[in-house]
Length: 212
Image 1 (tube, rainbow, N blue to C red):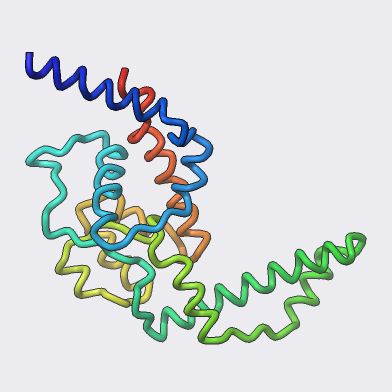
Image 2 (cartoon, helix red, strand yellow):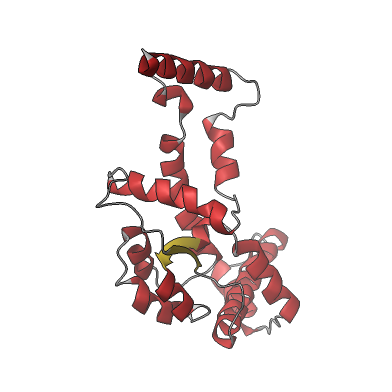
């Protein structure tokens, strides 16, 4: 009786939530989740649920994520010179791409190949403030986070992405192993990964269909 009552109560709560005018529709949820930032241990819950959803496994004694798994920031909070150099290249590349778009708007009849060649000749400086801004825009996004054994996490800290991948590839979690499939780590990589997580999140936290 107690179990049936609990089930009924839960369904009633879920119905109340989904009928709430501010309950997000799928499109709104996707827009918000794909840019959502998570601080430290708050990220552990969505990462854990996404891990179980992707593997098709529930939390059991054999599949449970170990308590010593830390939140790993792939692009670290404290940037080494390697990371600063990489981000400089990324910011410079983004500036060039924006310049190409601007030139296309100004001169729609110009040959795109020639525009790119001219832009490529230009020098694009990148300041420390721009490096910091790039990091701040990406550091806390869920796409930049994963779960990693605490020993490995402390060991690699602000290693370059390439060096971090040497540890990722031996990790127990597929979510972390799959990071080695990315040739580089930048804002596009983070967005792509978070978009992938968004598809999982839509199914995990779909109260409308999950209450049936």
